[in-house]
Image 1 (tube, rainbow, N blue to C red):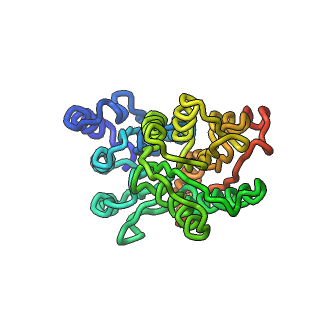
Image 2: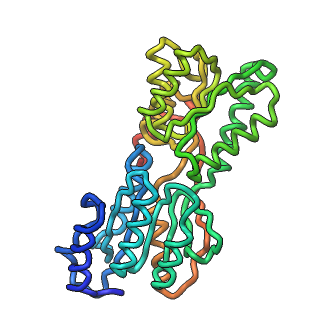
Length: 334
């Protein structure tokens, strides 16, 4: 698989012309002739959020030539078909490892079977996948999204008790992320459990935010124009929270622990935590995007002939205005 030289260069050039990647797959015109270089093909969801950009940068900063790697990068632009095509391209180019952040959980069996037949280990990052045969991928690195949702619900329950509102009707607007993504499914499941456990929690609207600020701004603004009442907006990532805040402020509505609407968010990016410290986001549950070093550790184990753990959960916490300061925010890598 290593040191294929001219044949791989020509194949990459042909595929770059023949397939609709828009120049996202790295060219091999400058390919290192070093036979010991480990080639990693990485397909990313896209660049829809600050979290996603941090995830991409973690991979780029980890798999460098100085560290002995050649990283081939692909931006799927939030389309599963693009990602499947990218994986097939990596198989044809005989990379050493395939790494991908799946857009949705299902629909991967066929292409991962092709990777297995080519004897290329597959490492899944961030969102999980649902396949008939778990041996189709070597390992997964990411977050426990259901635990994140449960943590948010527990915090909301305790916050309402603290405010003396635990017996009041609490009107909740739920802003979904990308439908079918693991983060969406897990965080939604946490909220669903909370709604079931609290008869006074009422879901007044469920809308698609697609993990983006622009889409969430649009749907929340529409709800406000329709007169939808809301005490809590449960946003499934920071960028959605930014869009919700933008819409609320445009209508003169205060948000935050002491405002008219509680904003719950996930990711805990620097920008998200800044909003949280300012009181605009009431709770920001951490979702750690720094997957590069963990993926590298898995590859190192495989190179040594070892069998890594199947699942690698990253450590996470949550933040409120009370446990934040500027020094902490500035010290974070994302």
